[in-house]
Image: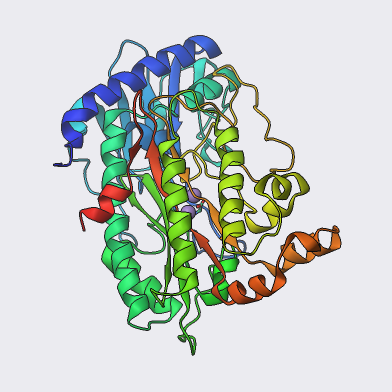
Length: 441
Ligand code: GLY
Ligand code: MN
Ligand code: MN
């Protein structure tokens, strides 16, 4: 399928954002919506700035991720206005004059200093809903983040427009291409650090551009959920490789995990294959009306079924779930919403007027508790790990008999398995955004 052109989809996206902003402003009782792009953050007692992370609301309107001290201004009935800082600066690369598919749809005003934005912002400030962090304050324009507006906009952000989906599909293609390069580097015997570099080179994105820190884990390191250490030397023996790495496209994230075995004929590969089949069934369950909390519980049962089949578990999946033993092997959530942020907002939102849908008891790391609806994109990332800290708790809690410890000893040197795709809920069958991107490589 030919990638959809964001240029043709952007006007409709902008119309959706304007309509949402109209409603948000009417709910919060303001006349104008102001979104500062953000300011640089500096390291304490230092003049070094952190990698810039743009206000997600800003990049929702315009595909700009690297402009500071700029403002998106929206007044109902008017075209969106972009106040765009292009400073006179010989220390840094000055952002280029705005160009691209989107500029003709917004009124662009170039400024040379942050303060020049002031006369271009509508007033008075008390009539403005200003979404951002406190440090974006400019004169009397201080972010007020009205809850009624934010609750509405965050909730609505779950429903991706065709424009957003086009960019998310492109992020998938970039990441899948890099995942292939990383697998080749693993099979060639590279270290974690060199696999990471191979990934970034193939993605053409460095550590500040990918949407989260790459997790590149060989052997036992796969059992560390957020392993970002990156050993410089290859291990003496290569057994397994877990990579959780994404890519960005115009500010939209992909979040993908794959696990590989060095020995294609071994039991660990067989367990990967079993998790992969189960994961695809979980992806197929991303249907409108499905409660994500139930998908999470179902995932526990499916994964424990695999552990039972491989002789690791001695009790039924239901018993493992009830006693908390399953949480020792699958200690994170099934997934989360994804979009402008890798862990996107509103995963717990009860409605567009606020409220929280609590996690089920005993599942403290689940990041999504909503009922799925068309337009939502979520990750589906089941995993099985051999984590001594958690397995010791199983023993301490009196459930040692539930586990065959010799089988744990066998699998521990492989670390763990996680397989993660990004899946679009539709009115019909779900669309797995990730798998076709791998096929296209
Ligand atoms: N890469 C972080 C996550 O999977 O949620
Ligand atoms: Mn991930
Ligand atoms: Mn994820």
